[in-house]
Image (tube, rainbow, N blue to C red):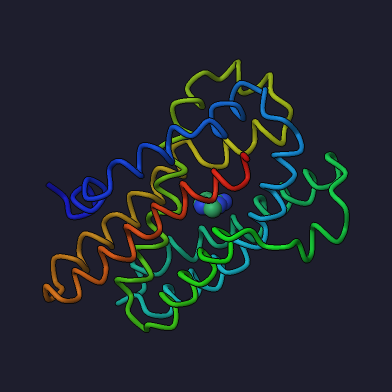
Length: 218
Ligand SMILES: Cc1ncc(CN)c(N)n1
């Protein structure tokens, strides 16, 4: 079994709770209350800030150019179409300026920021990749099944539908495959003590994905 699959299986209960969360189900059927979406977008935009810093750090620590390039390309998507998606959604949903720039952080948002900064500051590529891999793989896992029903996604308002299309499809699958392959390789080459640390980062990130949805859904 691939190490990335082994890591996922080590926290499968939280994984399934995150990837089958009512927040995602209601987003995909269009019934998610807009106030919940407003909270989510404002919290998630602060998540994106530290995600970009973590990804930049992983790009820096990757062993060689072929390991760096796919993540560097993906960072361009986040800085481009994904950032624009947030701005357009904030406008469409009339999210107040203060919520866009400095929302009060919910506990899981704070904890996720801390985990991402801790991984970046650890200087260990494996820890960085463990957190990045969870963040994108969890999203592919919940979004991909919904994206297969193209008509229903097309019928959604863009702030729901595009959140699904940004996290599904061939390109996004290739990003996850890259992150998983990086994770598999680093994990296989790591000493048991470092493997344990990587597993702790992975498990903690999965739990925080679930708690992040919980906090925005309440
Ligand atoms: C909390 C969270 N985790 C993951 C993603 C996927 N980009 C996100 N936008 N927000």
